[in-house]
Amino acid sequence: MTVLIAGGGIAGLTLALSLHQIGVACRVFESTPTIQPLGVGINTLPHAVRELTELGLQDRLAATGIPTAELAYYTRRGQRIWTEPRGRAAGYDWPQFSIHRGALQTILLEAVRARLGSDSVATGHHLVGWDETATGIRAHFTDGRGGDRIGSGDGSLLIAADGIHSAARARLYPDEGPPIWNGAILWRGVTRASPFLTGRTMIMAGHEFQKFVAYPISSDAEQRGESVVNWIAERKFPTDRVWRREDWNRTGGLDDFLPQFADWRFDWLDVPATIAAAEQCYEYPMVDRDPVARWTFGRVTLLGDAAHAMYPIGSNGASQGILDARVLTREILARGETEQALQAYEAERRPATAKIVLANRANGPEQVMQRVEQRAPGGFDRIEDVLTPAELENTAASYKRLAGFDVDALNARPSIVGMQPARGR
Image (tube, rainbow, N blue to C red; front, side, top):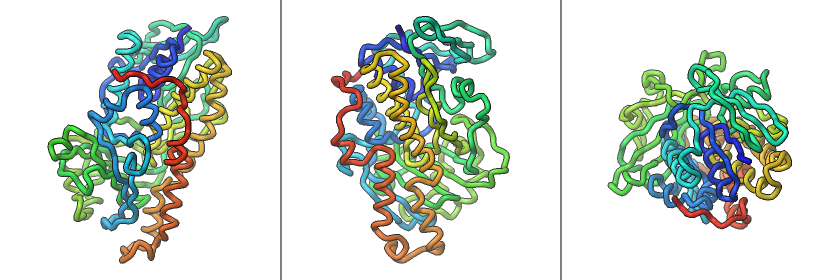
């Protein structure tokens, strides 16, 4: 039989490659007519890069992304709060990559088509329902545009990796409603600029109610002595403000946020100039969903954002979807294409991701910036007078443990999928 995967995003494509690695047939059904390299930057943490490496993709990631070497927190005045090494510089056996989201999805998509066949991804197929059969499951699809029924697919299991607006989750939880907005709006863009700090630094500046994040994402630009900088400008508003459906591709207006960053000119980065130089910016309300008590219903389960949509704090959204795919693959390898495999996957991943969703609502490791703003709103002479070194280190270390990328634990644990690494292609 064939495992049916609804959703051709990062999590769904990683699952397809993983199932192929263990010899299980699968097919991906994607709602959009064409999978395009959309979005802006994304971070893949070492625990996720480990999984992509075991799928034979690290060289492809390195050819386009930046191996992040440092994470640094700053105040809105550009005063340094905390700096820590990342990736191999921190002692991990795998790098951390900052990469364009569209480039990562393209790498996965090309690998799926090369390894599984050109017909392994069916675009323009929007999941609308399913029925269990005597031998498995039958999924039903519309064309994703006008809603015309275009057919069904039979398989052993249905894995819903169809994102924060998951049709499968909406059917399983019809009273859930839209995603939950916390009042924050993100404006995101990409700017060609001069390198800042180490040239491989990810920075976060500001506090809970106004923040700026920036990091380089292009190895090609780095080789030319330049930098392609992914940036995120964030402001928090009252939650009764009207907001629109989140969409990575909705154009934002500079007048809505640039004036509030006008004086964020640091010795090492001119924030307003970086924003103004972007070819385009996108607006995105920061939303998530409440953890649910169950992902698996018979031969159907949720995966990635469909299962645990979370705030983009701590660089964990896509990385957790990749881990989902690998754990599910391990359970299918051990238990076959069965309901028991889905239940074992959920038993491990649902509690783990629920903790991250809730931690991110509390601002995750970025809470150190808010503490500094509260304790020293006018700035400081020594950060040690505001936050103790132990307070800083414990905040960073506890989040790494929670999210599964504590360096010693990650380096020591066995592979999730106990197979020979796939060959790159």
